[in-house]
Image (cartoon, rainbow, N blue to C red):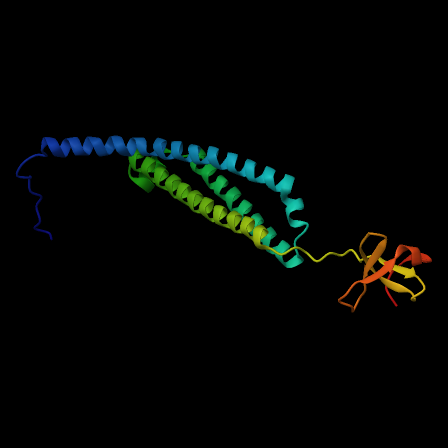
Length: 218
């Protein structure tokens, strides 16, 4: 390699080459501002989305999940909570992309040592901001999927079993005491649904000598 000598090009750059160089330089110079403008749009949209979803969860969340079984309630909480968390992290990524890197002292010599030129430094900042915007977009997609799954789970979840114990009536009449839950009473008769019996017990009102509420039928 000691005998290598640089050679002069056969011809200078063409007008097309010079135009392409200038266009690329202009594109690189505007890339950072373009990425940050996109990040600002995503930030505004995510802020409105999080505010809307959070308001709905605060207002209707407890009413929606209160009637669900415990297992389904945990699943819905994990899905909706995970969706909100993903949306918040996505908002943070969009904010970081718009605001740029953490402020710190940067000298021209440091920029030249690491990036070679100021233009390359701006391109590197644009690349980092674009990566944050892509992460924000991915997190928004995850958030929407989790929130949608949580909403669908509330549609298909069975109702929680009632914790209220039925009220039993013990009716005294000449045929003996009858006990059960009151189905309905009309036409001068009371109809009781007794535990262990398919057919209701019918007691005429004129034969009733006493009625009392009991916790369970004996």
